[in-house]
Image (cartoon, rainbow, N blue to C red; front, side):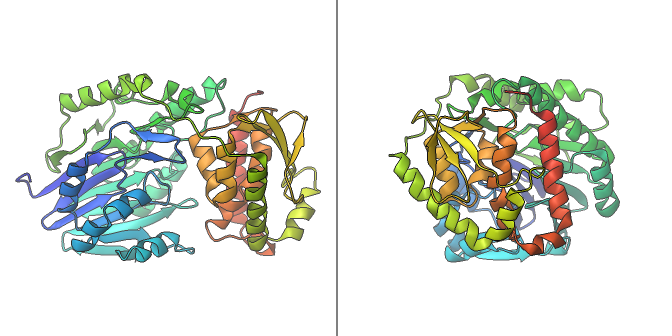
Length: 449
């Protein structure tokens, strides 16, 4: 352990360790294995010995949100005993569904739910505040030994208006931790322009967040991954790297600080080490040499049909069949319309119609294409469609196909934040407007296939 009293240590991806006196607060541990249904891999994986040594210091773990690159279930299962032995307290935002809470308590782990925007003291000189953002993200605002540290990770606080609103409520910070590259599907293989724009938008976000929050030091993180599936690896073509960010940021008022895994620095004397830049340069330069994941094939169309029927039962148990059916008849909405999926490994097109009891084969042009394993994953998991939009293991066929699919499958994104699709949705205009705002943004980026 280093001799300084208050420090920050980068572990991996979105995971850092903030230490002050006897408090060791770790964020978002994902250190090994794949994520988002074998769509993402870490650029660097931590050794088991490193992780065990780390957990013998940790007193608290904060989880920002439920995405698996932040809330890694394999981590909590593999290191369950050491987490219990060391009485490490897990900190997570209070949610309606309490799914994360339920899982952690089922593992007999100690968990504390954090109310939105409420102050908590881990120590007299270590104050934290968890701030919810958008559908399910959250940030952690820390005051540690008179230093203000904002961990914004993936929070969608992008444009100047949003950032100014955040600043007016929570003030400035000395140190900012924020995502620095795009992390989801960006329009398919032919849509390079969207990926170029998305990468530049992330750089502008880093600049705007840093300048408007009067930040002194920016630690870019939460982007040390690669798209590692045979179906999505093309998405790596325009990701931001440390070198790219450094060259684009230029003469700003803040300093960038890239840390390599397990690098710890005194929070009062942060400085860029050239060895850390060299480490990440080598890692990013070797991305194309790494092995790609190939999905296994689902056994048959019948197996997909069985999964689809379970999916329908799940949907109509939580949502109003009649309201969905009525809306499907309104042409201008385009909601819950049947659409065509090309199953790549079966070389067959199927029609997906929520109001039909079975999938059916068709010769019609397809709206989207994907492997059978991806579709099976959507049918078997309530978070399946959210996972697909992040891992990007699909392609659009007919122009507008992605939007058509979204207007059906995204219903479970609402359900996962405790919002059923019934008449009560009329009282959640904020959610409806947010959903359509996101759709409009996607439509503006898409190009004809």
